[in-house]
View 1 (cartoon, chains in turn green, orange):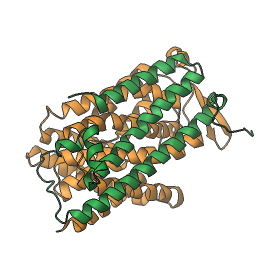
View 2: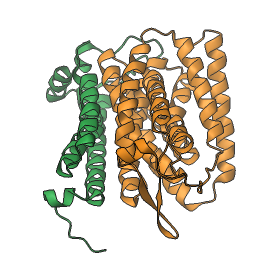
View 3: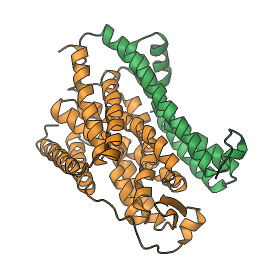
View 4: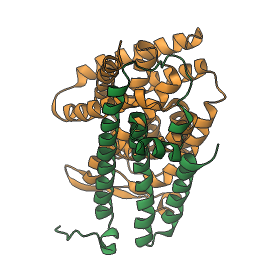
Length: 132
Length: 278
């Protein structure tokens, strides 16, 4: 069945087009994340000749645990900060997929699923942004 | 050992783990954790952090392909993600209160279970038991492609499936894995979805479940960039290669050999846990 593909709200009404857009979103997110991690990793390896000790748990420094901290480290050009930024992009990829689904179900007027996806989105944002 | 050697070694190990994970259907996370802890002596919290992030990468990378083929049931997936994400938040919180030995033992048991399940091919034909009130209200019934064209199926057992998914989420957050085996169990056995639909929908859900745990892991400092970099890139590259291999060659014998190896690693983890060495 030939179908015209476009980014219009009309195309979001069909599950098929929704699936393809989701697939594209996921793949782009992973590729972007891997590239940032690779760049950060190269800088990290060039500047840190000795590996950290991972045998005893200490936890990474405070600046690499929070979103503002990671942005600060990454914009300063630090290798570890850039790797964490790439990982943030990776974590954000499935989250943006859920956000996109809220929109897609909204266009389909499928209110039950708008609510379900909003609940999932809320839990994900709490995990990433919630204060602990 | 300098940084570059260490990173190369971890990358090579993770590449192999990702390859095995895809080939056996266990997933990269569940294979890379015993590799890092048992063989490289990495603390289990760092190993869980690295594994959970890798799970997001492989799940998102593979889901892009699966979703297009029309197997995954997006409504079932989205509905059950409420259960898995809530469970993952609980599981990730539990890590704080459980001794690492207990976590290692639970991990070993889940790994043995997953390895056993991976032998199960899955019955593609289930007698359709007709529509179910809850599933109909949730618009879950759908179709999937077979060699005879699109076949429609009914979804059943939604409450039981939902409960099992809470469990899958708890395990994901507690152990740093995708817990695909439990997700498939919930959809295949409890909800009577066709096997191929169960496995692809499970894969579709894994990334979201893992993201819920990863946020908490990040704020606790379990995600160390120096370790996660080679693990994530290695598992991702390995699983992409493994998935391609799975489509081409006859891999049944290989799968059995690897499942036995993974089972042995699992028993080693349980043993170390019991002796309090992890």
